Length: 248
Ligand SMILES: Nc1nc2c(ncn2[C@@H]2O[C@H](COP(=O)(O)OP(=O)(O)OP(=O)(O)O)[C@@H](O)[C@H]2O)c(=O)[nH]1
Image (cartoon, rainbow, N blue to C red; front, side, top):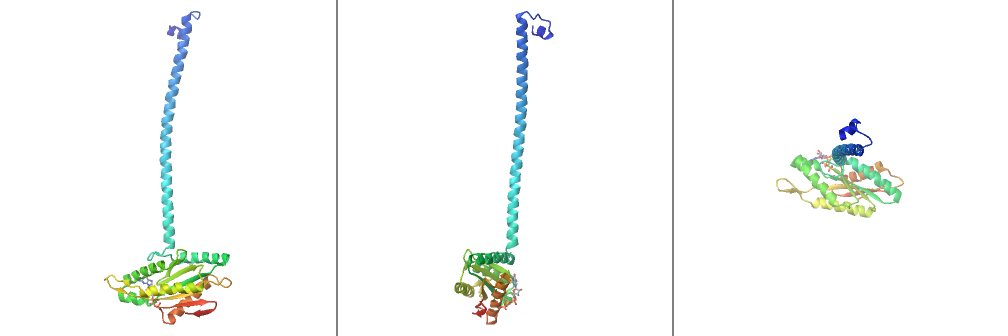
């Protein structure tokens, strides 16, 4: 009967004819539904694949970005840190000093710099070797770090010369701080690899920032002059260059 309806040869006046037609429509509709469901399933599977791939890609990108951030941090660290002592290097010191000068100007705050130099350091190298000299530099750096506040900055200016930046400090306190470091260095037994120890001293030049007259170069020059003065006067001492006078 169904075949008859399909072929169009059935009698349209017969009830069987209508039944056959309805059945055909139902079959076609069912086939369409099945086809749609299959299509939907295919689309869902494909979408899931794409979503998984996309998630993996996003995770990869996030990972790469994290690695990049880490590398940048490491690069910045390398560019601003002295490799031997782990203190800020000269470049980082100068940047921070410049920033502190701007802050001192804006908020009318005091600012002091200390220039420290280990006395007769060449003799340490000559007598105990370069490796021991390096160890002394590392321990000296640690001592500087221990002696300052969190808001201060200690750095290696170059060779056996160190630098400490003391924001928001008056001259009297800056001198006390410098002398505390000097005494701590002189009393410290620096360890040698054979178990013995040696002592060293340091000289310290102190300069206070003078807002009306100073820029960074002038401030550093005065700290350097004060250090030179300390060396000339016999070492193991602190000297000050402030408002046009030198004192110790
Ligand atoms: N071990 C070691 N020595 C260094 C380093 N950088 C610089 N020096 C040495 O530091 C010494 C500095 O010597 P000088 O400039 O003559 O000064 P000094 O012997 O400390 O004498 P004064 O500063 O006048 O008291 C030199 O022998 C340099 O080779 C370093 O990274 N490691």
